[in-house]
Image (cartoon, rainbow, N blue to C red; front, top):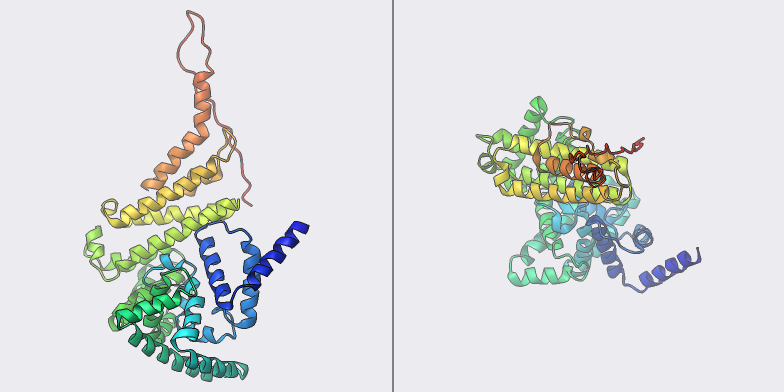
Length: 414
């Protein structure tokens, strides 16, 4: 207990010696490292301290009553918990928001930002929703125009990169800044598109698919460059994430990769692969924290995504999509094998059960997991059966004995 108190005091002393900008950057970096699955000593304590500070000061862009929240509100449906380096064309990483907001306030438009914050705080206190929306829209326009001028030259781009570097070490935050600018230009259309979608899409097929496709086609016709944003919003409503590829496969002339790549919604396949990568990270975290029931559900979703992609896209294996899918599945298998190796000999793991795969065994992971599971579960018994057979007398049998049946440990998932 004494050591814990000393650790907390030391961490608080360390944080107290940092500037507000450095503390904001530290929060972003810790959250980004945790998303990558990296161990961060003292992370729990630092996150509690930093988030508590930002709740009081209003630096965090996700806090209610914070002027920055109203600035980002029209596009908040696009925010994801992926690191900036992994956010695709339709996503904006939450990890970039603090740094971008600080840069806007301190470097891009400091005087206008200060005026905006003062006016917004008064409107928030008076609970005037119409006024807060007007104030936010006015400042959004100013930021967009300023960015358009600044990013029009190479010197301006380098200046922005350098400025953002004061608040975050992630160079990919610059890409998020450009996506924020693009999304805010069509902020009203994004909000309207989201309101037209069902809050939850259980199954993207039949009439439901036709209606969603009509909304997406209408949005893409008016804002073709912002189409990935609309796909992200649909993806967040889906119960079965892999069904996002229906927009591409439904437009394609054929089932093969080349046909699907030729459609304007081809990016939906990459987005599903991104979602699979998120599942991979979540599975690794669940395994590290010994949350087997959660890992079981995640792994079931992974099998479903793998099966759907391989079944619905012809010639997938020879494409970049197929190669990426294989890489992700191999990484998942490596994590599973590491988990299986922690068990005693002759013990089967619930995550190696065939029942998790609700479809016929197919695809890279199905083969890898089954082979690794068989090797880990039955291998030791088989070797023992061979080495432990009687050497026999001169006339004894030399046939190998049957491998011992492995003991199966039942893991309670309730």
